[in-house]
Every structure is written in structure tokens, then in C-alpha cells.
Length: 217
Image (cartoon, rainbow, N blue to C red):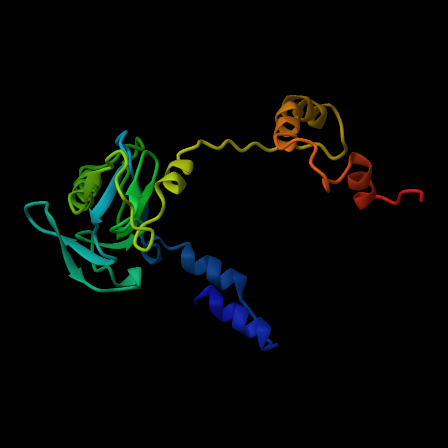
């Protein structure tokens, strides 16, 4: 049952009951569990090129020679018949740029792509090689013209190469953890804020403080 149906039931204010024990009992049987793999194909080569050919979205099939071919146009990955078929969703297409870390596409297939040691299986490597073989790209020439109507700007693509780090902090009240983050980050924020100088119209510290609390007139 799709999750969207539950949203419709809630939106239409329809009363319904769910037997959680029955659901748990159903999924407790190994025969009712399907093995699926979702794989995100990324650019790993250290190069920036413009894509001129890319595999289409749909179902692809692997032959006896391990080569893959386009089987049919499809939008539902549940139609994948067996482990020799895979649903591919194109992310990067002709006119886009491939660069280190770029997402090229998403593949969904039956079975597993990792073995018990969390290493790629031979089947996974054949699928990866097969999809990568469908791409064709050309190097970016210095000063070369880029058609903005068909491509994303190169500088936008390169900006996505900048690494981002995320970290979480658990501190219910302001304390030493947040203080350490402030001491580390504040010089960079200050440099960014003042990089255009103290131009007219820029809000003062007092004005900013009064935006988040009541200030005396």
C-alpha cells in the first residue's frame, strides 16, 4: 500500500484501522521480503568534461556478454523483472558537466550489489561498467563558448565540487560546545560580513539584536 494513500485518507478525513500485529506477522516471513539495491552512480575520475551522450531513463537489460542495452521506456522501477534488468534514472544528461563527485544517475535493481564483506559483487561492477560506457563527453577547452540555453554554467558545476562538512551538536542550553563553535567560526563570518565594507544602509549590531528581542526605545 503506497504511503500516498495514507496521506489521501488523512486529507479526506476517512477513518481507518491498521492491524500492526498482522503487518509485522506478514513481513516476518522471509518469502515476503524482496531484495532490492539502489545505487547512485558518481563521477570518480579527476576531470571536468561536458556530456554529449548519456543513458536514458528507463529499464536496461544485461545480456550474456555482460553488455547492457536499453530495454524499454519506464518510470516505475517495480517493473524490473529479474537481476538481469535494472531501472536507471538519469541525473546528468547531454549539455551537463561531469566532475569529481557529480551524481550521474540512480540505478535500482533486484538482488544485492554488496557481498557479506560489503564489497561490490561482480554483477555490480558489470552494471557500473555498462552504464559508464553509455556516456560520452568532451574536455572543456579554455575560452570555449558555452550555450546557456542547453547547459548549466561551468562555474555552477565547479561550485558543486566544493566539499561540505556537517556535524551535529547536542547541548540543550548554550554552553561550552556552542561557545567553541562560535570561537572557531566567528572570524570567518566577520570577514564575510565586512567584505563589502561598512556600506550605508547595512543594519547595525543593535538593530540586529532588537530584531530578536525587545529593545528600549
